[in-house]
Length: 625
Image (cartoon, rainbow, N blue to C red):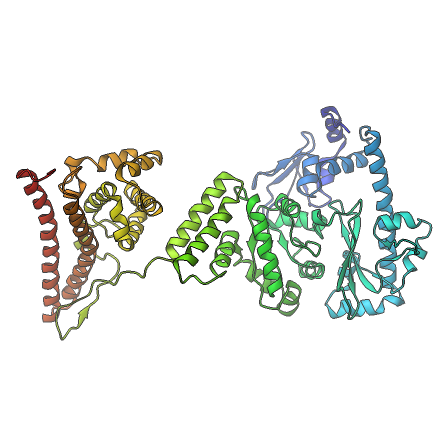
């Protein structure tokens, strides 16, 4: 079948867009247009307009825009060809001729839809009759109202091998077998598939019955029995309640995925209509793609037991390769042993909404699961965790998302296994006062030479230049440098970003020399900053110079890092001591302040000695020997 532009234009011209939209949205005349509240996002002031003359709708709030066909695909959730067929039928417009094979397939499907419709009417009638009393009692016990049962077209299959077959004998055994309603065993008479069960019709996106899920009444196995795959029904491509949930989901801006039919029905009755369920199996790639057409980040609300959590993890792993910018999953962990039906019946919809507000992003679910997968006490076990995370990220097809996951997993791994924070500066200045513990953050103007992170940027630049000159030293100071790079990174400037890049690169490849490190930094956009840092004439330290005594440079670099760490702590402590003395002058406060002033002066002398020693070496010609 070929849908030409001329045919589609004729279809749009014959369709009253406002009449189509008004089936689900209340519109009011506003000049030459119609206006109402947008069905694609929640709003109280109407910003959604329909223009019949131009044949389009537009929302000035969320920018939703389209014609009659797009309305059917976006708001109703229909596939494109189904949307066209439904509009054409309403407009009295014949569809273009199909090839013979496609026409025969369509005619056959139409006949099978008539069969499933007739069968479900019969199931509904049995539920309403005397034979359905036990099922009615079960629904009342589960809190399902009569109105909800009618909305979901629930029915009853009597406990008989031939009642349905007899009731639909005019249709014949062939179509009933083809739609899965009868079971055919070679050499025996066909018999009813569903017996003694509550029947729950499964619909396609256009709302046509294509299969059933059937729950046993009382005890027995299996608890649920589904239709087999048929020409109308593909279990791996179908989601229960998608025909009703899709419009509600677009309005709510979310879609929820639960495990079972009764969960869907219970939530819908509680006012949460944007809910679907897979059909007794793990979510498939096709089902995930359908969900992403409805909402960019579906929320999985599987049961709180071990089986439910395993199912959610399987869905997470199945989704990973398919991730794309803005397209992901979220997860809600229900109380252990409860499903959404239990939760809503016991505590109301608000209890579920509270859990939904705290839904866990996909990256969190993957991280916490892998973290808990096995002990992490040894280097080998930690390496295993790193490998598993790397494999997950590598499996993502989209390059941009893959890079972000690799970076995020690396950041979380580093943060989780970071050493305990260094102890704050502690010095006993007076036996009566006891050890003094300064505050963690910079406090006052006494630390004006220290930037917002507490790090002396001039000295930090020198240390960074030294690390680029001597990258092997990074491993010796990794614990200290980790905390320093976090502080430097908080500033958001080039220095902080370069500091983090240098430490990461050296840790990843312990064999990198200075030239190799600079080459990689240049490719990452740090060429100008790194080159500036390596200009020997800008910094008077042995470890920033090219050549020279390597052992001495390493020793001086050790000393510079120690000073870089200690100075902010002393400055903080001094600021606190000064403030304490100004608030209340005591001998103890004065002695504490004096001791800290001396400590600060000692650090300045140590730094000056580093500079002077380097100048002496250059003056006497020792540098480079």
